[in-house]
Each structure stands twice: as structure tokens, then as C-alpha cells.
Image 1 (cartoon, rainbow, N blue to C red):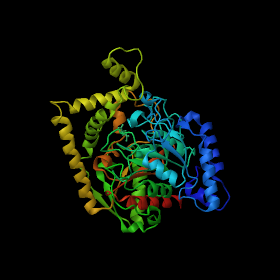
Image 2: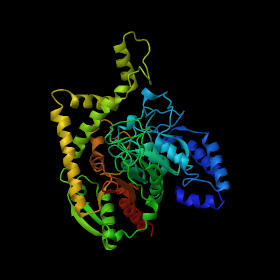
Image 3: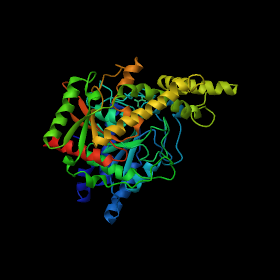
Length: 473
Ligand code: GLN
């Protein structure tokens, strides 16, 4: 069973462990699991960084994440490290600066041991669309870990690091957390700085943590959340002490069940596992109410119009001229653009760029992009209405457990549908957490999702913690 940082910290501060040794042990374990393909790079230098944290512990000046061994999705910039985004087009690109989240984590003495694999530019639900090969699910290596942050989820589940950072544009933290049996939080849009995050769909993207416990996720949030003047969309709101709120009485919250999310299309084992937790909450005195998200059926098409539109514009910058892959042997400027992009991008990214360009084109803009923006508003309103009556909403994280490698790559729509319960949180900008609540008949992890009001991560974390603790007893 992979260790939590909370447990490790106790032994560390009791003088029974060292950061150096733990960093080395995790690096060795990561090297012994190259079959998973979870890491794209591992940093030997992290041993020296860990030694510095040991010195701080001796001096009593260590930060709140001292010795936390971390994996970072390779779409987040780290100074002087390669930043590939899982794409050939950035295969040799090195970042010249640190993302804000990295600065904050390192200030609190977290130790980053490597960059994790991902679907190219975070487009995908299985991490099979990485230019550097698919990631395997440590629970069953014939299956996908989910995506697009599949490397981060697999690394945490396999015990190759205490925790990891992922990003979530439509489900890319929660769905892989669910498939791999770990905890993953998508914060409120704007809660965590995006400075240093390579953009996919800027009005959806958010960075968030994976870990083996709700407590660890809450602790990481305390460090990465908060205003950053380098990201104008980051919210200037105080960050609560999430960890100290976890033990509040869960009975003071009202929880909603979205009936649309427990109907047809959800695997029986998944539905039963979620219903079991709903019954557990009810019998512990939590008030359970039915709520409705009437526009749930429109979330996937709306998301795939808006996210591809934003992506087509964000990905214009990869043209072979300024950075990244440049095709050789071309004479005309136009050929350089075309060839560099044709060679550098994989098929899913090309599909999205074409779709996004189409929905933004004159003549189709109103029918697709404009309409989708209006539907986004309606979905937001569905949640506003539901949150008048409840403090959190429960759904399965995904309709199924982890599928087989290769099962959905030939049918993009089937792949897109695995995000049916996750994309709505990104459309509405609200926080959502996935936590493991059992296994199906094939022993694959099942994830339960809790959605909350904007900036009320504390509520869903408290409820998630309550469910997690009740599963232990
Ligand atoms: N699976 C969704 C997509 O392919 C979401 C990806 C994400 O959250 N980055 O777009």
C-alpha cells in the first residue's frame, strides 16, 4: 500500500527517516517500474534537493511539505527542465522559468523527482495519446490509467511518489484518479495560478493535486492555491486551512444526488458502489436530497466545441518558427509551418485543431461557438440552482472503471464519453474531487465524485474525508 505524506512526515520529524533516503527510494522504485511509462523524466538532482531539506529539518526551519516526494505533469514549467506536453512538437523544449505552483511547492520543501507522462497537450482520457507511449494502469497493466494526467495518477497509485500534480480541463485529474484508485481534486477555476501551465483551453484549465489520502490533497491545496499577480484569472480570495477543516461534522452538510448521473449508461458495480456511500451518509445523519442537472446531456458536445475552439487558438503558437520542432529541408515559409505542425502534432491534437478552427470559422461561429457559450451558461445555472438546496452533489466520477488499452482509440466519441460526469464542473468552473470507494467485480477501482460551490473546496474535502474514514473502519 503506497504511503501517505501525512504518515511519512511523522516518521521524518521523529528523526526516524530522512528526505534523502526517501527521495532515493522513490527514484529507485520509479526506475524499477518503467513498464508503467508513468514518468517521462526522473531527476537525479532531487537527491541533493532532499539533502538540503534534511539540513533544514536539523535546523528546525523546514516547510510544511518537507520531504514530500512529488511528480509533476509535463505540462507545468520547471526551470531548466524539459517541458514536452507529451508532444513531439516540444520534444526538445526546455523551460526557462518555474510555474508559480512549483515555486510555492519548493518553498515549502516538496521534492520534485520527475515529470509525468500525459496525453499530448492534455487532450485525451486514457494517456494513450502521448507521443512517448501509453501509460499503464498499475492496478492492471493491460488497462489504461485514464487521462490526460494518467502518468501522475499511475505514479501515485504505484507508490512512485507521495503525490503528484495534474491538470483538469474536462476531467483529467478526476477520471484518472478514479481509474487508478487515488484521490484527485480539480479546484475551482482561478483558485490555483496557471502561470507556467501550458494552455489547452484557457477558460477551463486548472492545476490540482493527486495523493493517496484526502488529507494529503488538502495539504497540497493549502500550498498551491491563492492569488498570483502573474495570472490575472487567479482569484484574490483567502485560502482556508483545508486540513484543519477536515474533521468538521459532515452532518451539517446537505448532499444532492443528481438523478441524471445514476441512470442508464453507468456500470452496475459503479452505481452500486456510489449508492452504498449515499446510504452510508444518510444513515450517519447527512441530509440527502434529489437535485437535477437538466442540461447534463449537452455537456460533452458543449465542452468539445468550446475546448477545441480555445485549443485551436492556443496551439497556433507552435509553428516551427519560435520554438519546438522545426521541419528540415523546406524552402518556403508556408511549408515550414505546414510541415513542422504536420510532423510535430499527433492525430488527436490535429483533430481538435481542425474541429476548433471549424467552429470558429465565419458562417459557423454563431451556430456552434456562440450557441455552445449560451449552453455553458445554462449548465452553470443548473448548478447555481442545485446549490441553492445542497452543499455538494455526488455522482460517479466516470461511468465505468478502467478500460483496456486500445479499446477506445479507434472511436473518439466513445473516448469523449468517459468524461460525461466530469466536464460539467469545468463548464461551470466549480471544484470537484474524486475518491476511491471500492472495487468492481474485476477488482478495478471505482471513483466517487463530489462537486461543490465555487471556492468551497473545503466542503467537498470534508465530505470526502468523512467517506474515506468510514471506509477504513
Ligand atoms: N478528456 C478530456 C479531453 O480529452 C479532458 C482533458 C483534460 O481535462 N485535460 O479533452
